[in-house]
Image (cartoon, rainbow, N blue to C red):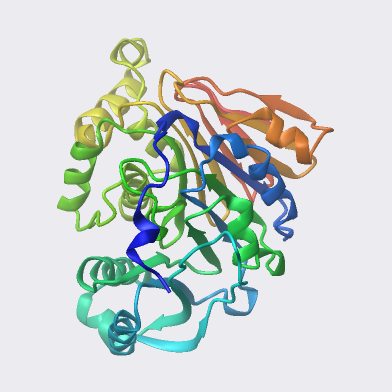
Amino acid sequence: MYTERSRKNLYDDKIFSSCAIFGMINLKGERFTSKKPVRAVSCMRERGNGLGGGFAIYGIYPDFKDTYAFHVMYMNTRAKKRVERFLTRNFRTLLSEEIPTENSNVILDPPIFWRYFLEPLPPRLKDERADGDEYVVNKVMKINAKIRGAYVLSSGKDMGVFKGVGFPEDLAEFFRLDEYKGYMWICHARFPTNTPGWWGGAHPFNIVDWSVAHNGELSSYGTNRRYLEMHGYKCTMHTDTEVIAYAFDLLVRRHRIPVELAAKVLAPPYWEEIDAMEPRKRLMFMALRQVYQSLMMNGPFSVVVAHHGELIGLTDRKKLRPLVMGVEDNVLYISSEEAAIRFISPNLDKIMRPSGGEIIIGRLERSRVIEIPTFTRMVQIK
């Protein structure tokens, strides 16, 4: 059972530059086991410290691929009862079960983990005049903000987040991830920035379809958070990674901005670069800078972002945190270190180190990898 001891920082070396991030996607949508993702992130063990680790897996629930899968962490049974009453009022529950875990000597005082496969109640959707994703976002915000002792780890369809206090390879064993398959995995090692090492604060962070693993520290966190809260997001974890997940959800899902341009909101071109653009493009980037000024993310960061059909890698404009991509056959890898990629895939077809502000996108439906250097061109890799 969870205790407050789990939230204490047992280490003194809070070095923000050392997180490990890793992601891989099979561009044909073929599902694979945890073996390669776990081996890759464990290769970067020196970047971790045992205070946080986790995985987001896509394509994990093919039998429930059209229903929302809530992974919920409970610190006590009272919180579980309150959440389940709330879910009963707002959703039809197709299945409710404990997430299987393994007894471990290195994972201490774990909370209760439960999963629910849910469909929004049509009358409630009609009353709130919301589509399914918007409805789910609103309910997740209420649970995380209002029900003490409960936290929704993930809430998307056919995906799930497994995370906690510990090294990633130990958490993979604890959550029995060798029993799952998915076509896309992202992983993280180390504690969440600016929070103690505790179960709910570990990476990846998720909201509906979006999951983020992050290395770095956003000095713009306060500004970003206030802007997102104006749009109804509640930043209950008080960590900068949370705002990255919500920013992608706001820009791409709500505002329907293409992922390529959403990345340029978070890590925009410099003004002198915008001034040098041809007139039509210059007007577009000026508008993005002006409208979304408070979503621009300052400070060192590299991120791996996942949502169904796409794996995304992005760094700050000066690339103060490392990021490497590799391609072999139909698999795209994105990692903090090249060694982690070569450890599981020694015969790469391509290896590349994106420049600052450059976005890498692996797209499932088109079975291709796209590089978008800075702001000027797009290259397709067969």
